[in-house]
Image 1 (tube, rainbow, N blue to C red):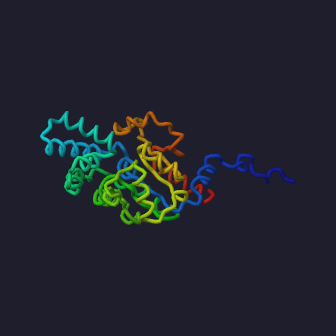
Image 2: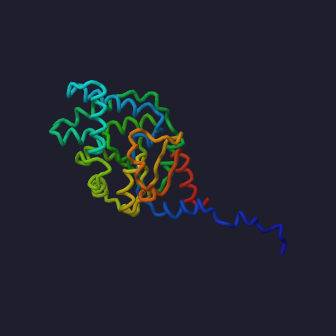
Image 3: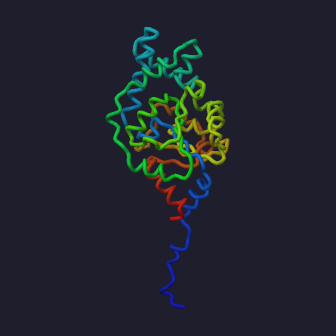
Amino acid sequence: MNKALLPPLSALAPDPAKALLRAKFNGVAAWVFDLDNTLYPSDSDLWPQIDERITLFLMNRFGLDGLSARALHRYYYQRYGTTLRGLIDEDFANPAEFLGFVHDIDRSTLAPNPTLALEIAALPGRKFIFTNGSRDHALRTAAQLGLDGAFEDVFDIVAGNMVPKPAAAAYRAFFDRYGVDPKGAAMFEDIAHNLLVPRALGMTTTLVVARDDQADRRQAHDRVIDDALSIDFTTSDLAGFLAEVNAALRGR
């Protein structure tokens, strides 16, 4: 046999990384994306704007100074998952007012991401945004990113009956609304704690981390969590990671 016609051993051996991606994502029929700091980079100024608006809302509502409002903001987040959930549990009756106020931000600094748009479009199956924010905020932000029409729907805090991630009830409401089997679904999130329930239910989970590997201040409490319990993959480049997933699913 002419040995010159044989491919090198490296070409015959399967790529372990691609094999793992194929094993985990093959058969995924629903791709679920968080919005803030997931579909857009965490070094964007969008979340800091929202964070400031939340603090300002609390200052105006309760007559607090900035430091006290920040402390209340942290308390609500740590106890209830979102500031809005904390307000509702303390008899705040106008969620639309809060959502409209805190998401009244400037998105013009957010650059479109055509590569991300192409890779999301190439994923086989249904695609959703699942956010603790508002539908309007998700649609406006997706449009700024160049992701118009990329998703079947947005499941927001209102659709979840004001129950936020990471509560199991929020995920059950999502699955019920769209008829999604979690064992045939994948979720992409920037907060590890929000992946615990999805992973336990059988979803393939990917944590999207900051490019400089520094966690957002909202993730401080996540450091006590064993990542192996909630995370299959970690990436700081969502578009690049999806390109690898698409290539693996195509057998390339």
